[in-house]
Amino acid sequence: METTLYDILKQLQAQGLLLEVYNLKCDERDPRWVDFLPNVQFINSTCDNNKITAAADSLINGLDSNSLYSQKHHIFVCKGAAFKPEYLQDALKKGATAYMCDNTHAQALRTYCPHAVQIVVNNIRLAMAQAAPLAWGHPDTRLITVGITGTKGKTTTACMIKSILDARAQRKHICTSQGKSPIGLMGSITTYDGILNEESTNTTPEAPDFWRHLHNAAESGITHMVMEISSQALKHHRVDGLHLDVALFLNISPDHISKVEHPTFEDYFLSKLMIFSMANAAVMNLDADHFEAIYAHAHACSPLLVCGRVHAQRRLEAYETQFLSDKKVASTLKAALNRTLPADIAAHDIRPQGCGLQFSCDEAHNANAQQRDFFVPLHGTFNVDNALCAVACADLLHVNTSDIQQGLANTHVAGRMEFIPTHTQNIQGIVDYAHNKLSFRCFFSDLAHEFPHYKIIALFGAPGGKAFDRRRDLVEEAAKWADTIMLTEEDPGHERVQDICNEMAKHMPKGQKYYIECNRAAAIEKAVELANCSQAKTLICMLGKGDETTQHEQDRYVSCLPDKDIFIHAVNALKESHDQ
Image 1 (tube, rainbow, N blue to C red):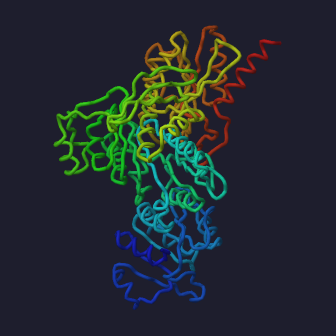
Image 2: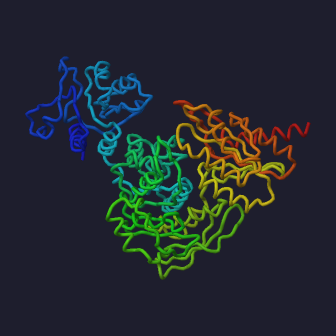
Image 3: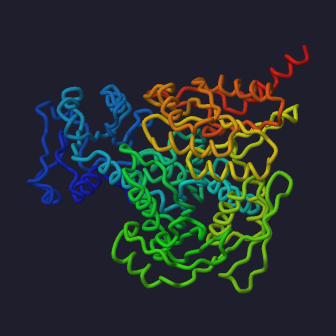
């Protein structure tokens, strides 16, 4: 069914978001407009009617907040601190049918573009969230969708699920219209929608871009879209209107707690729990903190599969009312209290093998199932948690065991627990995306078990303008494990790197050896130099950026070499100096 400009206006009006419309060709005597008046004004400018750009029945097939993607039959959204009127002018030149703005900017923009159809709303974020799925034609209904949330492990789990689904697609010789993988991905590292394959800037993009990617996927022949869904996306309506075939909730731990993100842990947790209201089926981790609250929200999804590595079963005991979103959820948990919840899929016999981990699975939900064995080419037992959730998701999507086994064995996450071989036994490197307290704890505890006799240099920073608790948490957690800490840049945004590092240094335990080097490349080179001088076996852990090739500075993403490349260059330079 085609969407018209009238349909968009009707949706905004129904949600109480529409204030005024300027320059729209419409007959106010048309009975369709009765519900709009008198609350909404349709104001035609005094200019020549031939210059008015759109009628109410104009087709709409897209909505953009970046003029780079604007085209005919699209609506352009004027939003953000970096917005400039020139962007609107560019969008209109490319054929945009109308533009949307809030009341604060309406008068100035009418002066700048007097003949364009202007839609004035009272909340631009909510308005574009309501309009985007409708403008893009609800492409999620043409896809099988998987959404993943949690404090850590989203990227790895998403890559595992994509690899599993790719294995099945390859066996069945399924591809897109362009001969590409039919499994899309939207996440922290990469966005692949069948048309675009690019490095991501947000875990979950803003609503116009999110729905554009889903539209690209549906149009190009993508069959499944695997998505990381952040707490910010859920709280700020980026994914409103999305239907999920499967939702996965991996774990929860305090993160993103700040005035500009989530004011409290309760707000953060409840935001993440919203994912279950969008889903048919669900997967949850029995080992997660606050698992009772997670279970209470997930219970409405059917089927619900529960995974466990530490626990094969767990008693429902805690009744934390602050984490229960409504009376129905509270009633669900109250009825389940003092019951024992078994894991539908439980891991056991976890053991190192080669460059990864082997483990076995038992299935409580399938009485006739045989034990299944899996291998993941990743270090860290916490990756078994991720793999279990991926296996459960694959089961819900009716993937056979051999495809799951092949997909897990072929999983590759660049920059995730990635060991870097060197010519010397004394200096080893590892890059990882670990960037919060929970991921640091899991990372270092596994590392200490696997490399018990190595000195550890931990190199990391904290982002600017958000997640301020990390400036304390990361330092305190790293200090429990690292012999030396190197503080450096990590997407400083509008803050000075030196200021961020100085604030982190205030939380350094007494006696902890640390350095501040604001340039990340120089910090890695300094770490290699320190390891070489110590003459002890040393593991240099470069954390937070993984395989990323940009730094967020001010309002720009500045190109940079990935940590791995800088480390290899520094070690090779060391070898060359020794050989001379």
